[in-house]
Image 1 (cartoon, rainbow, N blue to C red):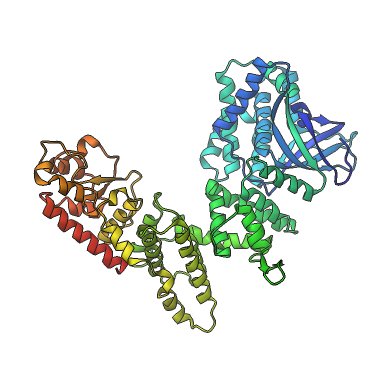
Image 2 (cartoon, rainbow, N blue to C red; image 1 turned 135 degrees about the vertical axis):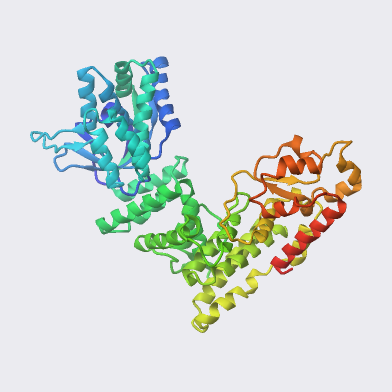
Amino acid sequence: MSRNQKQIESGKMFIKNIFGNYNSNEMWYQIPEYQRPYVWEDEQIIALLEDIYSALNYERNSEYFLGSIVLHSKESETKNYINNEVLDGQQRLTTLYLLMAVIRDIATDPDLKQTCETAIYQKENKYRAIPESMRITFEIRKEVQHFAEQFIKPVDGTLKTEALKSEIKHTKDISTKNMASAILIIRHWFDNNRVDIGEFFTHLMNNVLLIFVSSQELDDAFRLFTVLNDRGIKLRNSDILKANNLKKVTDAKRRQEYAEMWELIEGELQEDFDQFLSYLRTILVKEKARMSLLKEYELNIYHPKEYIKESKEYRNKTPLLEEGIQTFEFIRKYKKHYDFFFNNENGQLGSDYAFENLLSILQDKSLADIWIPPLLLYRECFGDNNLLQFLQKLDNKFSADLIAGETPTTRIEGMTKILVELEKIATDESISDSDKLSKLLNSQVFNFDKTSFASEIESSQIYKRKFARYILLKLDYLHSGNQQKWNTPAQISIEHIMPQNPSTGSQWVKDFTSIDRENWTNRLGNLVLISRIKNTSLGNLDYIQKKKKYFDTKMDVFPNSLKIIQSPVWDLKTLENNHKRVITMIKKYYEV
């Protein structure tokens, strides 16, 4: 492999070359600190093993392409080995490394065991000026490297079943947890498939290959990393954002600290991490996102521009956030606010659980999350002062816009206007601190279309509205008294007290005319929540039977529902009165 400065190279490498010698150079790899954790699970690992095994059986003498890797490569001074930082492909490469260790430990052939040992660990060879090293070192976190030295490097390390199970159960590090699980999955696969290990390994080393792209220049390697992402390789926006920001941190110790912090947050949030970063984007930009997360940070946060009409040119604006240290500290700060609200770190605020229970309703899966950035920014600006009052104002605006039928764009703009007003008031030195909160909570940015709101909640077709579940949860919130913390059940259904399709001879048909049923069946006053999946056969029972079988033991977590079923009958007058009661309660709360 030619190593001219700045040259970008590509080619194919068989597994024997990846975990051995390529063009007279020993190949070593580092999983750098900016990489995401090892996240492969059963499905991906088994798919890889099955693909290799299938190729062995059906294309025994053919090359089998397993994927690609992007490397930042640095040749040693003695030119006997090459250190490769893995920018992309670490999930697959790490899995292959674990596979080598498992085969070493379950094989009986001494030559096979020794071949695996060489692929895993390079002993010092002073005559070739090669120091000792594991073939892959894990710089993402010290816990991962420690795991590798305990379970991958030593012979029989992958046979420590109980210790591996303990890692899975007790470790908080996502990489080591998944690596321990991967070892057991690979062992289980070999145990349950009649695989000739010698044939499998020979095929793996000599016929299976990866395509590599590498550069000695880190900037070029990062650019490849980004370009390949744009072309469909599944890298998350957060992976590239982390890499680009770590490049800006010159102090190695601090860079490692931020890499570990990033990985820890990523491990906690997992697939929600990009969404968390999008909340921060919204706080900074205060506009609806129009591009990918990565481009939003690049073009609207780090390198914003404004268009000058007179000259018909774009002019650079002051960055909203600097790359590197400032970005990492911004993320650290807002993760603390996020944990306060969403990771049970807020305890009890005030004399009851009004704040916690309202927050729980807003987190219902039927709702959008556009209200989260204003809540995070509020705590950054005002701490815990009047948190409940602000959340009530925020929730009323958010939910009222939804109920009133505003478009998604209008609803998002409503939240961004709150962000703008919040920051404007918080940073206005002409307003005393004691007056800032009052001015914010009475701001017009919380106004909504009260006429449309009232019309919608009084509609005869509430059941078919997308906000039906939310408004019923809100009724339960208003009935609860909030003396206890309310944990929303995992399974919630909306139930009609008077059923949609009553039987011909039922009491429902006797008590309600067809016109009554058409007018009242789907109104708010006829709807309740139940903490289980609906059962149609029970749902059509007469009221007394339904009340006994359906409601008596299952309504304790839904205060509004509990109040309704206290009625001895359910006729038109009862329904009308209940409807009037709940509508009045909602209007009063929303000040309509």
